[in-house]
Length: 297
Image (cartoon, rainbow, N blue to C red; front, side, top):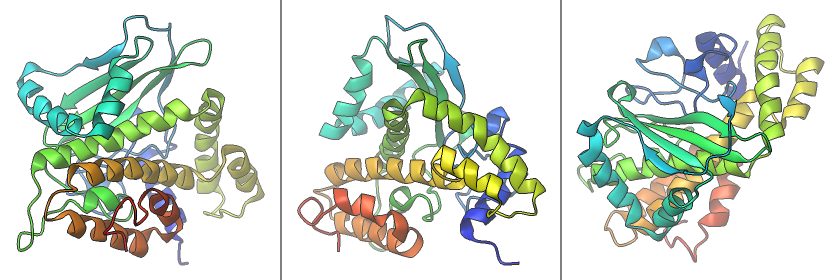
């Protein structure tokens, strides 16, 4: 039996995460040591996906919000360099200040050696009126290194240096990964809390039926769940990642516009999309038209 990409990814994610109810399967992003094809935990030292439910909490509305840097002091100097790269652009400053100045929202940023070269976003919080009031971005201590697979991360993958042609400063790599994560926060901020709650409730049910019915995505029960959720778990996950990659692309367009490797990077982004994600190409093209990104051909 030949499996489609969506079925293959869903099967491997479910195989590694059970029914996607464990804490390690509730974050955003497929990030793991080696940045190979996103498969399952046995293939890597670290694996996370938001194919499963997001971690959600209902809390009191903050009155002293902003950005909370919650990491050991030894990471402070490193983070300040990443932050400086982010804030060197208009888009970076705009997104940072949006959270830094919002006293009714707490954006927590954590850094951990255990997360290595990857990152994730989770621990989403709403108040009892349905207002989005908190989230946590978790960064790896080695964020300046490593590049994920082009299939789901066409922008981040494009930053892999080509020694014979160009080398990209690791601080730019780290800042681009941070903008990807900020993209996830922006997406949830724009979402309806009830819609997210519904997906949280139905994704484990979808995965359970999928495993028990012989991997038949045409099962009427799954089709009904897909309709209620707005897509299969894999489609929901893919869409989230590609929207966050659009955010990363917009940051890069501004940050490296004066660099010699600008066109090399954006041609690689376009090539990655053409090769692996044609169905998502339109959303990138709408932001990357010839007037905005001259190298987008």
